[in-house]
Length: 118
Image 1 (tube, rainbow, N blue to C red):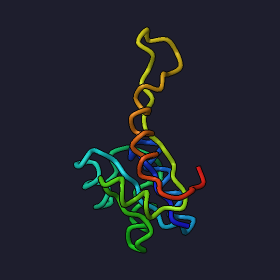
Image 2 (cartoon, rainbow, N blue to C red):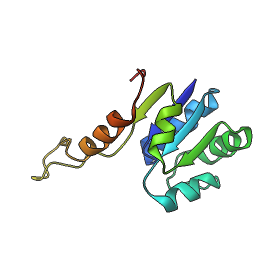
Image 3 (tube, one colour):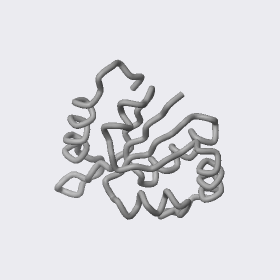
């Protein structure tokens, strides 16, 4: 299965690495060019036990790639995971509000040309 993970933070990177470990072809998309370059070389910007090994193995097999281009990744995918941060409420209270992910969801929706499992 062709999987796209949007967001290369803690959740997105680990999700992408695990999906690639299970044999799926994974593309992780992020807007941070430096982070994408680092991950493409197998370097991890976060700490998670065994993540470097998972990424190295997935990269060697061609099971995972990292990009900044959302359009191509969505067009090629069967499944899309959205793993972007949710900013805290302005009051600092627990829980988050969805103003951060909303523009991203609109961009994603505009690029989907066929049904996907979401």
